[in-house]
Amino acid sequence: MPDDFDVIICGLGAMGSAAAYHLAKAGHSVLGLDRYQPPHTFGSSHGLTRIIREAYFEHPLYVPLVQRAYELWGDLEKESGRKLFIQTGGLMIGPPEGVLVAGAKRSAEEHKLQYELLSAAEIRRRFPVLAPDEKMVAVSEPRAGILFPELAIQTHLDLGIKYGADLRFNEPVVRWEPDGDGVRVFTASGVYSGQKLLLSAGAWVNSLLSRPGLPLTVERQILFWFEPKSSRDRFNPQICPVHIWEYARHRFFYGFPDLGDGVKVAIHHEGELTDSESISREVAAVEIENIRTILRRFVPAADGALKSAAVCIYTNTPDEHFILDYHPDHRQVLIASPCSGHGFKFSPVIGELATKLLEDKTPGFDLSLFRMNRFRTAG
Ligand SMILES: Cc1cc2nc3c(=O)[nH]c(=O)nc-3n(C[C@H](O)[C@H](O)[C@H](O)COP(=O)(O)OP(=O)(O)OC[C@H]3O[C@@H](n4cnc5c(N)ncnc54)[C@H](O)[C@@H]3O)c2cc1C
Image (cartoon, rainbow, N blue to C red; front, side, top):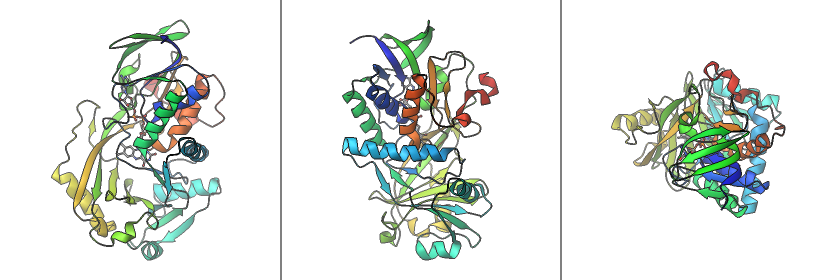
């Protein structure tokens, strides 16, 4: 095999696997490197399910991107013959003036999305397993649903290989350096040349930047699967939507229907700050009790036996918007990382955009929220 590539990808998780697929499909010679063998449980992309939603409370700018992601998920399902998405609808529940409900409403209105605003009584009537406080309301959006992250990553990798990508696992990138207009990448077992480099190393990305680190935090997150205590049928994905709650000011949790593994729930943020190497993978009794306290109040029928739990990683930027931009000192290097706990749904569109940016084409989407120059330390 040649050791000179159009593009070298460092990190083949959600973003890197999607980029490998899009780049190889576009005809580029691609080398993809990962320190482990994705899909794996050490980064940010495990835990069986991820939410996709369209009325994006974080910012309306994400809506065209998620709409393109929906198209690409559909294309990927067709091309692979694999089921990667199920539509359940979604509820964003909280106080009417809270960031979740007001933000989802703003995106829905700005982009003329179909949605309903439900009162607490209406939420309880339609979805009897959900028990919002009287003053809560919900933005109900029909297109939300569930993606299967491990299968999606495997599918991007499989099809990337089909289109000729050279993917090497258990081969960590140790460092890279510019080499004229290209790059040289050093791993534990080889040195490779590329015209371009994509850094998609998720929680490890800071260790690969040849300049003072980005202001990123790595946050421990716990996923729980509970046996329904009652009303099992009502957690069926045909009638139970994915649901995100602003249960106190700026504090969130979310839940899924029961796909056979139990009812999956998790707190969004509020995790211990850590790093990708020393993170504790054990779940403490007090952490189980914390989520049970929330469930007893808002989803009491889910407060049954704990079936399993998993620890996962958020890599956060200070404003919780993504990074998708050229390295400030080296335009041949693109960074597609820190997705601040909400990036999975976008992975195919990030793969497509990374391809365009590495081809020096205009992306066709407003990516201004994702620029590096918003971080003062990154220059
Ligand atoms: C608990 C939890 C729930 C989430 N829920 C949602 C959700 O519902 N919806 C949603 O859209 N998003 C969600 N997210 C966010 C989403 O999952 C992440 O944004 C996304 O998976 C991150 O993908 P990534 O490619 O950046 O990182 P990863 O998938 O972790 O990939 C990074 C890869 O880089 C590799 N790597 C690291 N260092 C090196 C090196 N030196 N050399 C080679 N390879 C290296 C790693 O091995 C890894 O495979 C959630 C995240 C978590 C943790």
